[in-house]
Length: 306
Image 1 (cartoon, rainbow, N blue to C red):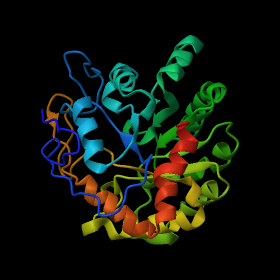
Image 2 (cartoon, rainbow, N blue to C red):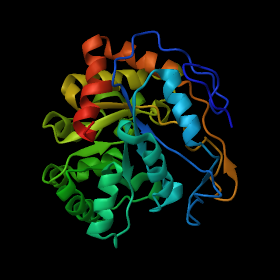
Image 3 (tube, helix red, strand yellow):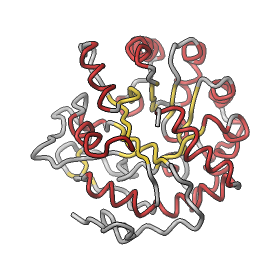
Image 4 (cartoon, rainbow, N blue to C red):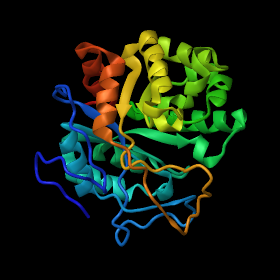
Protein backbone atom coordinates (compact mmCIF):
# COMPACT_ATOMS: atom_id res chain seq x y z
CA UNK A 1 0.00 0.00 0.00
CA UNK A 2 1.26 3.49 -0.85
CA UNK A 3 1.90 5.90 2.01
CA UNK A 4 3.14 9.42 1.37
CA UNK A 5 5.52 11.35 3.62
CA UNK A 6 4.32 14.65 5.06
CA UNK A 7 3.72 17.22 2.36
CA UNK A 8 4.11 14.84 -0.58
CA UNK A 9 1.59 14.61 -3.40
CA UNK A 10 2.36 11.33 -5.13
CA UNK A 11 -0.19 8.71 -6.12
CA UNK A 12 -2.58 7.43 -3.46
CA UNK A 13 -4.28 4.13 -4.36
CA UNK A 14 -2.66 4.53 -7.77
CA UNK A 15 -4.07 8.03 -8.43
CA UNK A 16 -1.95 11.14 -8.95
CA UNK A 17 -3.83 14.05 -7.35
CA UNK A 18 -3.45 17.54 -8.82
CA UNK A 19 -2.22 20.14 -6.38
CA UNK A 20 -4.89 22.65 -5.33
CA UNK A 21 -4.39 25.85 -7.32
CA UNK A 22 -5.85 28.08 -4.60
CA UNK A 23 -5.07 28.62 -0.93
CA UNK A 24 -7.00 25.93 0.92
CA UNK A 25 -8.32 27.63 4.08
CA UNK A 26 -7.20 26.47 7.52
CA UNK A 27 -9.67 24.04 9.02
CA UNK A 28 -10.92 22.82 5.64
CA UNK A 29 -12.88 19.58 5.91
CA UNK A 30 -13.46 16.64 3.60
CA UNK A 31 -16.98 15.67 4.66
CA UNK A 32 -17.28 12.30 2.94
CA UNK A 33 -14.60 9.61 2.99
CA UNK A 34 -14.51 5.90 3.76
CA UNK A 35 -11.97 3.49 5.22
CA UNK A 36 -11.83 -0.20 4.24
CA UNK A 37 -9.64 -2.76 5.98
CA UNK A 38 -7.27 -4.25 6.73
CA UNK A 39 -9.65 -7.13 6.23
CA UNK A 40 -7.94 -9.49 8.63
CA UNK A 41 -8.95 -7.05 11.40
CA UNK A 42 -12.12 -5.55 9.95
CA UNK A 43 -13.89 -8.08 7.71
CA UNK A 44 -16.72 -6.97 5.46
CA UNK A 45 -20.33 -7.94 6.11
CA UNK A 46 -21.39 -11.29 4.63
CA UNK A 47 -24.53 -9.47 3.43
CA UNK A 48 -22.61 -6.84 1.43
CA UNK A 49 -23.77 -5.89 -2.06
CA UNK A 50 -20.23 -5.36 -3.34
CA UNK A 51 -16.62 -6.00 -2.34
CA UNK A 52 -14.32 -2.97 -2.34
CA UNK A 53 -10.56 -3.23 -2.22
CA UNK A 54 -8.77 -2.10 0.93
CA UNK A 55 -8.37 1.64 1.51
CA UNK A 56 -6.39 2.05 4.71
CA UNK A 57 -6.20 4.82 7.27
CA UNK A 58 -2.56 5.52 6.34
CA UNK A 59 -3.66 6.10 2.76
CA UNK A 60 -6.51 8.37 3.88
CA UNK A 61 -4.06 10.47 5.90
CA UNK A 62 -1.76 10.74 2.87
CA UNK A 63 -4.73 11.73 0.72
CA UNK A 64 -5.73 14.52 3.11
CA UNK A 65 -2.14 15.80 3.34
CA UNK A 66 -1.87 15.89 -0.43
CA UNK A 67 -4.95 18.12 -0.61
CA UNK A 68 -4.02 20.38 2.31
CA UNK A 69 -7.12 19.46 4.33
CA UNK A 70 -7.19 19.56 8.14
CA UNK A 71 -10.43 17.79 9.05
CA UNK A 72 -12.18 14.59 8.00
CA UNK A 73 -15.65 13.07 8.25
CA UNK A 74 -15.60 9.29 7.84
CA UNK A 75 -18.88 7.80 6.68
CA UNK A 76 -19.80 4.18 7.38
CA UNK A 77 -19.87 2.41 3.99
CA UNK A 78 -22.58 -0.12 3.16
CA UNK A 79 -20.23 -3.18 2.83
CA UNK A 80 -19.64 -3.00 6.59
CA UNK A 81 -23.33 -3.03 7.45
CA UNK A 82 -23.84 -1.97 11.07
CA UNK A 83 -20.35 -3.00 12.20
CA UNK A 84 -18.69 0.38 12.70
CA UNK A 85 -15.42 -1.04 14.06
CA UNK A 86 -13.21 -0.02 11.14
CA UNK A 87 -14.45 3.57 11.20
CA UNK A 88 -14.22 3.80 15.00
CA UNK A 89 -10.63 2.58 14.90
CA UNK A 90 -9.81 5.32 12.39
CA UNK A 91 -11.52 7.96 14.54
CA UNK A 92 -9.52 6.82 17.55
CA UNK A 93 -6.24 7.32 15.70
CA UNK A 94 -7.23 10.63 14.09
CA UNK A 95 -8.50 12.25 17.29
CA UNK A 96 -10.12 15.69 17.37
CA UNK A 97 -9.67 16.42 13.66
CA UNK A 98 -12.11 13.66 12.67
CA UNK A 99 -15.82 12.94 13.04
CA UNK A 100 -17.91 10.00 11.92
CA UNK A 101 -21.34 9.07 10.57
CA UNK A 102 -22.44 5.63 11.73
CA UNK A 103 -24.98 2.99 10.71
CA UNK A 104 -26.72 1.25 13.61
CA UNK A 105 -29.12 -1.63 13.98
CA UNK A 106 -32.53 -1.37 15.57
CA UNK A 107 -31.34 -2.96 18.81
CA UNK A 108 -28.54 -0.50 19.58
CA UNK A 109 -28.82 0.60 23.21
CA UNK A 110 -28.54 4.12 24.60
CA UNK A 111 -25.22 3.10 26.13
CA UNK A 112 -23.98 2.04 22.69
CA UNK A 113 -25.09 5.35 21.19
CA UNK A 114 -23.42 7.26 24.02
CA UNK A 115 -20.20 5.39 23.33
CA UNK A 116 -20.45 6.27 19.64
CA UNK A 117 -20.86 9.94 20.54
CA UNK A 118 -17.80 9.86 22.77
CA UNK A 119 -15.86 8.25 19.90
CA UNK A 120 -16.70 11.16 17.57
CA UNK A 121 -19.90 10.08 15.86
CA UNK A 122 -22.12 13.03 14.94
CA UNK A 123 -24.66 11.50 12.59
CA UNK A 124 -26.49 8.35 11.51
CA UNK A 125 -26.62 7.23 7.90
CA UNK A 126 -29.64 5.81 6.08
CA UNK A 127 -28.65 4.42 2.68
CA UNK A 128 -32.03 4.03 1.00
CA UNK A 129 -30.66 4.09 -2.54
CA UNK A 130 -28.12 1.27 -2.19
CA UNK A 131 -30.66 -0.80 -0.25
CA UNK A 132 -33.25 -0.25 -2.99
CA UNK A 133 -35.88 1.35 -0.73
CA UNK A 134 -38.47 3.09 -2.94
CA UNK A 135 -41.55 2.91 -0.68
CA UNK A 136 -42.11 6.31 1.00
CA UNK A 137 -43.95 4.68 3.90
CA UNK A 138 -41.03 2.38 4.69
CA UNK A 139 -38.60 5.28 4.30
CA UNK A 140 -40.72 7.45 6.60
CA UNK A 141 -40.76 4.82 9.32
CA UNK A 142 -37.00 4.40 9.07
CA UNK A 143 -36.46 8.17 9.21
CA UNK A 144 -38.67 8.74 12.22
CA UNK A 145 -37.15 5.87 14.18
CA UNK A 146 -33.62 7.02 13.39
CA UNK A 147 -34.40 10.66 14.24
CA UNK A 148 -35.72 9.64 17.65
CA UNK A 149 -32.40 7.97 18.41
CA UNK A 150 -30.24 10.76 16.99
CA UNK A 151 -31.99 13.73 18.59
CA UNK A 152 -30.81 13.25 22.22
CA UNK A 153 -27.19 13.51 21.06
CA UNK A 154 -27.65 16.49 18.75
CA UNK A 155 -26.81 14.33 15.73
CA UNK A 156 -28.02 14.65 12.15
CA UNK A 157 -29.32 12.01 9.73
CA UNK A 158 -27.46 11.48 6.48
CA UNK A 159 -29.54 10.12 3.60
CA UNK A 160 -28.61 8.65 0.25
CA UNK A 161 -31.93 8.51 -1.57
CA UNK A 162 -33.61 9.29 -4.86
CA UNK A 163 -34.97 12.81 -5.25
CA UNK A 164 -38.48 11.41 -5.63
CA UNK A 165 -38.30 9.91 -2.13
CA UNK A 166 -37.09 13.27 -0.79
CA UNK A 167 -40.07 15.04 -2.35
CA UNK A 168 -42.54 12.43 -1.06
CA UNK A 169 -41.18 12.89 2.47
CA UNK A 170 -40.80 16.68 2.40
CA UNK A 171 -43.30 17.36 5.18
CA UNK A 172 -42.02 14.47 7.29
CA UNK A 173 -38.42 15.69 6.98
CA UNK A 174 -39.49 19.25 7.84
CA UNK A 175 -40.95 17.99 11.12
CA UNK A 176 -38.03 15.85 12.25
CA UNK A 177 -36.15 16.99 15.38
CA UNK A 178 -32.74 16.71 13.66
CA UNK A 179 -31.00 18.19 10.61
CA UNK A 180 -30.83 16.15 7.41
CA UNK A 181 -27.80 15.77 5.14
CA UNK A 182 -28.29 14.55 1.58
CA UNK A 183 -25.40 12.63 0.02
CA UNK A 184 -23.95 13.17 -3.45
CA UNK A 185 -25.88 16.22 -4.72
CA UNK A 186 -29.08 14.64 -3.38
CA UNK A 187 -29.06 12.62 -6.62
CA UNK A 188 -30.20 15.65 -8.63
CA UNK A 189 -29.69 14.76 -12.30
CA UNK A 190 -27.35 17.28 -13.86
CA UNK A 191 -28.68 16.75 -17.38
CA UNK A 192 -32.25 17.62 -16.30
CA UNK A 193 -31.28 21.07 -15.04
CA UNK A 194 -33.17 23.40 -12.69
CA UNK A 195 -36.70 22.46 -13.77
CA UNK A 196 -36.55 18.74 -13.06
CA UNK A 197 -39.34 17.11 -11.04
CA UNK A 198 -39.01 17.08 -7.24
CA UNK A 199 -36.11 19.55 -7.09
CA UNK A 200 -38.35 22.26 -5.62
CA UNK A 201 -38.97 20.10 -2.54
CA UNK A 202 -35.25 19.76 -1.86
CA UNK A 203 -34.67 23.49 -2.39
CA UNK A 204 -37.46 24.20 0.08
CA UNK A 205 -35.75 22.05 2.73
CA UNK A 206 -32.44 23.81 2.09
CA UNK A 207 -33.99 27.28 2.14
CA UNK A 208 -35.61 26.63 5.52
CA UNK A 209 -32.25 25.45 6.92
CA UNK A 210 -33.52 21.94 7.54
CA UNK A 211 -31.30 20.21 5.01
CA UNK A 212 -27.66 20.20 3.94
CA UNK A 213 -26.44 18.86 0.60
CA UNK A 214 -23.01 17.34 0.03
CA UNK A 215 -21.33 18.40 -3.19
CA UNK A 216 -19.68 15.01 -3.53
CA UNK A 217 -19.24 12.37 -6.25
CA UNK A 218 -20.53 14.44 -9.20
CA UNK A 219 -19.95 11.45 -11.48
CA UNK A 220 -23.04 9.93 -9.83
CA UNK A 221 -25.26 12.68 -11.28
CA UNK A 222 -23.38 13.79 -14.41
CA UNK A 223 -21.96 12.11 -17.51
CA UNK A 224 -20.41 15.25 -19.02
CA UNK A 225 -16.63 15.73 -19.17
CA UNK A 226 -15.70 17.89 -16.18
CA UNK A 227 -19.28 17.51 -14.88
CA UNK A 228 -20.26 21.00 -16.01
CA UNK A 229 -23.97 20.30 -15.46
CA UNK A 230 -23.22 19.30 -11.84
CA UNK A 231 -21.55 22.69 -11.49
CA UNK A 232 -24.79 24.35 -12.59
CA UNK A 233 -26.64 22.38 -9.92
CA UNK A 234 -24.04 23.41 -7.32
CA UNK A 235 -24.61 27.06 -8.21
CA UNK A 236 -28.37 26.68 -7.84
CA UNK A 237 -27.92 25.17 -4.38
CA UNK A 238 -25.45 27.89 -3.37
CA UNK A 239 -27.92 30.61 -4.33
CA UNK A 240 -30.69 28.95 -2.29
CA UNK A 241 -28.68 28.65 0.95
CA UNK A 242 -24.85 28.68 0.98
CA UNK A 243 -24.92 27.85 4.71
CA UNK A 244 -26.24 24.39 3.88
CA UNK A 245 -23.54 23.21 1.47
CA UNK A 246 -20.76 20.73 2.27
CA UNK A 247 -18.00 19.20 0.15
CA UNK A 248 -16.70 15.65 0.19
CA UNK A 249 -14.20 13.82 -1.99
CA UNK A 250 -15.96 10.44 -1.64
CA UNK A 251 -12.47 8.91 -1.29
CA UNK A 252 -11.57 6.18 -2.22
CA UNK A 253 -14.42 6.48 -4.76
CA UNK A 254 -16.43 3.25 -4.62
CA UNK A 255 -19.36 2.90 -6.96
CA UNK A 256 -20.94 0.99 -9.80
CA UNK A 257 -19.66 1.03 -13.38
CA UNK A 258 -21.98 1.08 -16.38
CA UNK A 259 -22.73 -2.36 -17.75
CA UNK A 260 -20.92 -4.23 -14.97
CA UNK A 261 -23.01 -6.13 -12.43
CA UNK A 262 -21.91 -5.93 -8.80
CA UNK A 263 -20.62 -9.13 -7.26
CA UNK A 264 -20.14 -9.40 -3.49
CA UNK A 265 -17.42 -11.99 -4.01
CA UNK A 266 -15.36 -10.19 -6.66
CA UNK A 267 -13.20 -7.24 -5.66
CA UNK A 268 -14.51 -4.06 -7.27
CA UNK A 269 -11.96 -1.41 -8.30
CA UNK A 270 -12.32 2.15 -7.09
CA UNK A 271 -12.87 4.96 -9.56
CA UNK A 272 -9.59 6.79 -10.35
CA UNK A 273 -10.88 10.27 -9.46
CA UNK A 274 -8.42 13.16 -9.10
CA UNK A 275 -9.47 14.91 -5.88
CA UNK A 276 -7.12 17.86 -6.29
CA UNK A 277 -8.80 18.56 -9.60
CA UNK A 278 -12.17 18.16 -7.85
CA UNK A 279 -11.19 20.79 -5.26
CA UNK A 280 -10.05 23.17 -7.97
CA UNK A 281 -13.30 22.58 -9.83
CA UNK A 282 -15.28 23.33 -6.65
CA UNK A 283 -13.33 26.58 -6.26
CA UNK A 284 -14.27 27.56 -9.80
CA UNK A 285 -17.92 26.67 -9.19
CA UNK A 286 -18.15 28.67 -5.95
CA UNK A 287 -16.27 31.65 -7.37
CA UNK A 288 -15.19 33.39 -4.17
CA UNK A 289 -12.84 32.97 -1.22
CA UNK A 290 -15.66 33.66 1.25
CA UNK A 291 -17.97 31.03 -0.20
CA UNK A 292 -15.20 28.43 -0.32
CA UNK A 293 -14.41 29.10 3.32
CA UNK A 294 -18.08 28.70 4.17
CA UNK A 295 -18.37 25.37 2.35
CA UNK A 296 -15.03 23.91 3.45
CA UNK A 297 -14.72 25.29 7.00
CA UNK A 298 -17.69 27.06 8.55
CA UNK A 299 -20.54 24.75 7.53
CA UNK A 300 -18.72 21.54 8.55
CA UNK A 301 -17.62 23.09 11.84
CA UNK A 302 -21.24 23.94 12.66
CA UNK A 303 -22.72 20.59 11.67
CA UNK A 304 -20.03 18.24 13.01
CA UNK A 305 -18.99 20.20 16.06
CA UNK A 306 -15.35 20.87 15.22
